[in-house]
Length: 429
Image (cartoon, rainbow, N blue to C red; front, side, top):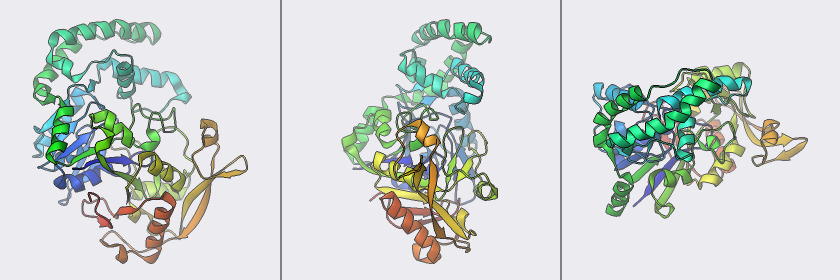
């Protein structure tokens, strides 16, 4: 039975949470496989309730789905428990959560170092959220990380804390002139988290293997997106993990031979948060119009997102890199009311046209978009639920994106609500 991966095809914030929520009632497991609370999914339910999720898998809003945080995620226990409490107060059952024993924890020194290093970089900063995600992944790679399973053994937790803070406090105090972090205070704080999180910590690999063997559908949702991938994104302006489809295998323990489908989500235009290249970025009133109509402000940070036209070069790259079988295009309604809608179909670099992602960081920074101009539409499409209902120009826009991206567009978002979609092909079959 299927193991399905959901990824972002751009720089994040494409609407992945909405897709997971839409399919949540049809799958048995929803698994978060990468990132931390530097990401956010905003979901609007049919009754108008709005939920901003950061660490919890979006399937938490489906009462039947088992929700899992995989080993590839870095968890800030304080943030997770606050999110659980907030959802519980609103009547959402969070006790079905399972956490991989191998997931790494974000510690106070990670947050402290993230903030101070970003300030130290000045104009060269990456634009991180300051929530400790990068330093947590750095310690994981350096084999100095503290994992969820360590919460179950107070002796191991204490020893690891003493070891890691011996080094981190030297850096904080002597390099950055900051206050040292107290071992005992952190130890007691995290013992408190252990009391609540302990029952959720388990060997999630085996749970997921057995689920697939039983014939259950396992749906793996990524955070961030393809162009923020540590290896394949616009480095160094990327996240600290691998949100691409291949990262789902590493972040859950599900082997690649069990993957059946890769669903990618892209906005009908383009946004980006933080620093880094953005060839189609708009700096005019049209960009501001898209920002306001699309409510383009970070779910986690509240920062205004940079806006721009759809970039088919990026989208085609994402399709090929992830092996995308189905593309979801969201927020098509935001483009209503424009005389024409430009689509980037290539770049010009040093007088030469290219139609693939430039190899070097320098070339990407100097890429000038080559546009194809498609006729716009003025109709309100937010209540339309079939492709044939869309204005002819909106249909042409979708069909042209489908052609440029090289894969079928199976779903189109025409509004923020759970039901504000046009389904062209079933995403699960």
